[in-house]
Image (tube, rainbow, N blue to C red; front, top):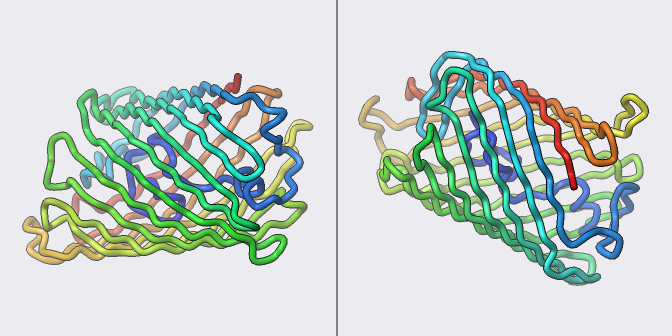
Length: 322
């Protein structure tokens, strides 16, 4: 189970944990002042929002990349989630909001890989001419297999600016402070500068996103410290399904990590490399219900045998927005 920080090949984290600070198509267009037909202004939207989620998934190789463990066994999974946000302040130049997110995965057989996460977040943005400065902060608490597993504090300042009317760039600096409940050798400070380029077309309903980042992680246990980089390419397109306007998205991530010190179990310097292919289809069932189906295939090479794995994950989900 791998996931990327900001969707651009960052440090993998337990699946069904929320996306790290990033920028969605709608928020990108809103920040940049682009025209998106589905976008609404703060004046005609409520200050608070609540979304409930429920779904099902099948994982053909249940794993947890945070602790370099893969079972080699498949399992079906039920997923539940809640996402609440409240806008504290919003005008033409400034935005401040807080949020809470809950996610739970329940495996049919491999209950030791169930994940529960609680996330509290704060984000603020301010426009300076055509550019926008954003600061995201969150605190994440993750329970794995019914026991406390990981706490992550995240700070992610970024700046977003247009180059042309349909080309935008975003620079960010992601900092994570990770504290493991049991294996404290893995406690880490992760730093990740990143550059993203967005190209919008089809009246800002579609986009191409190219990303690159550098990663440096310093851990309490010297065998887990590494440097690396991530590259990604993503495409999002509008589609019409059952007379509803939906989206289809494709993505590819490449991740490389070179460890700083010898790993005792293999008596050599560890090297990891991922390729991740993703596809997602989403469309509204009604004005309040969204259906999505995702597929992700991860191929992870490592000279540490327990870290090497191949995994396919198919997920379906219904979301209800109040």
